[in-house]
Length: 380
Image (cartoon, rainbow, N blue to C red; front, top):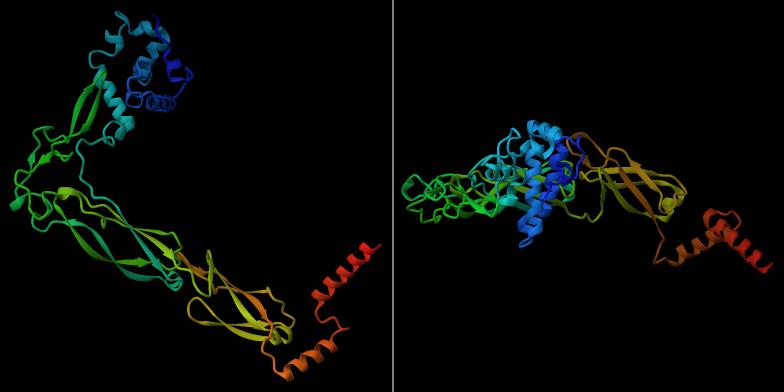
């Protein structure tokens, strides 16, 4: 039976670049991998053809020969030896290709190194701060339960400071290879857990791991202008690594608590301030608090309406890693007087009667004039 064209197998054009070949191979290999298609002989066959095609086309010399002579270039006497042109080591060559491209998919390896480095896990800490802290910045102590290096064995995991021995199963590589059908799979060594070393006499306090559970206190610097959801990374402050491996990182996730008076919008601050009806009508001035604990004075023009907003430049939030500040916006809430005395009620009544023809409330007069026109149109 004649072989299918290698370019057709990969689904690429004949002038495809190496990157295009690699992308096409990766996509199809994940789809056809035997681990995802257990017992499917057809998928296994296509998977083998896919790797055969990629092995040829990724090599410039082999690809040039294939482009000129086709499959004949790799048959007996074609100039590239037997076994389809791959030589006796094709099986191992494929395993290396697959590990290089997919890493963890075939056993947890992430390109390059042999043994695992025992790095500690990264940790997350949720920290809530007040809006004032977000404005000015601060230093906060946090207490984090984590794994730290064992003092007894100095992190080695061996009792009495004895040196670990090379693992006899993997010979220090930290990984073992297993043949599975037509391809080789590399997995973490079960004897040493990937470290490449074993301990004959483990340290008792840490049970040979080189680390123990403790709570440690750290000082976290909160920069001025930090926003809700900001992530702060403290390198090396996560869990200690296994048997002297590097420590993970600690990530502080900052949330800014809601304020009872201010509302933040990026670098700007918004607030709503009740305004006496007399001040809104006659004009005047009011004092409002600012986010940095100071006071700001606002001049209120006569005839101010409810909902009008006053802008105070440079009175908003600090800006992260920037010397400036945002603005503050104050919305006026005109307050209707309540619990009137008899005298106040009488004065307001006189005011209402005196201003009936002057249209001192233009919005309401304009609204009712339009309503009257609407009613007149409906009658007609």
